Length: 423
Figure 1 (tube, one colour):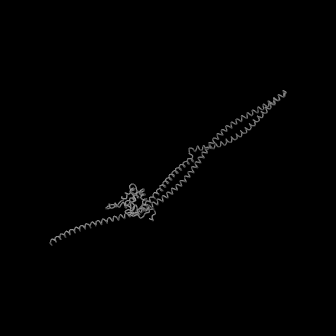
Figure 2: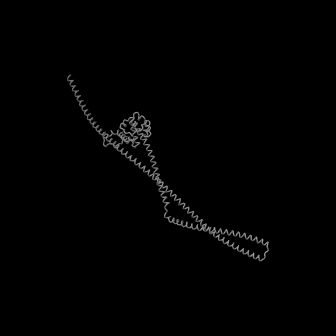
Figure 3: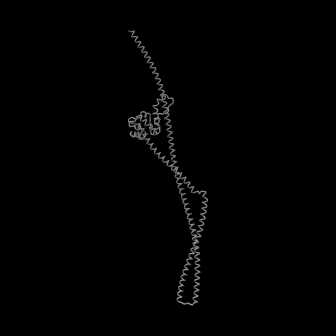
């Protein structure tokens, strides 16, 4: 007991476990503590072992009595009773080393003992607990692996879509290539014309500023002349009221005044001409300003298109960054997949080695069973020979008994005759 690497459970725990985890239906209801202690019942123990084999290897209990026998065997009814027991024994011999039990014997099925039976049942119970835990771990790993595979597929699909988008954004269709070239040429021409127009507009604005300064000077002069004329008129009225001039002086003054008026009219006409020229120049400037505004709108549209192209380039850069990131994740997933495949290969190698060992153990057990069956056949032949000899001996004894009876009858007759003669 101290050498076991697994705990030996109490009887109540074992009964509850096998009732809930192994047995089903009426068998679970009929299993009680008295079937194991103080003396285990062989039928209950055999049923438990067969149900354990059914749970772990899907080997149904009725299969134990369906093993193939040697053809043309005599008296097959002698083998019907031991077939299921030998089958359960061989299967348990193959299974119990996995539970760290190596000393299982045929006597543990035919006449089980309490401590050995509890030890074997505890080992199987410990193995089933371990199996359930590992199955949960394997199920979790399978679910994680499936989720990783789904993520890998989605990443691959996203990468393909991103590659297609990048190709669409980076490549210009052939039907739009000519249009793009025309737009580029028109853009370059428009930029050149806008530069030339900007230069002309600047020159015209400079000319307009000069004309405005000249007009301001002329207006100031006109205002001064008007002020002087009004002053002169006032002076003339004052002088007329104060002084009585001679007609000659009046004529001379009138001529001077006429000359002054003519010069003023000429200056006014010149100013009007300047004003007309300035208005025409202002109209030209307004037209140039409208053209410049139109060019400015075109430039704004070009700037919007350039901003859109920049946004497309930024989106392209973001898609390339996302593509590189997804490639890195894909590489990491491939590395994880490789590690999982390596671990799976190692597990498969271990399982193949264990299967080879189990196959060798099975072959050894089958050879042992065949040897036992051969010995059974030899014993059966010897038994038949002994039965024949016993039959012959019984026949001889019956023949001898008949002879002895005859001799006794003859002796009794002779004695009767002798007694009659004596009398």
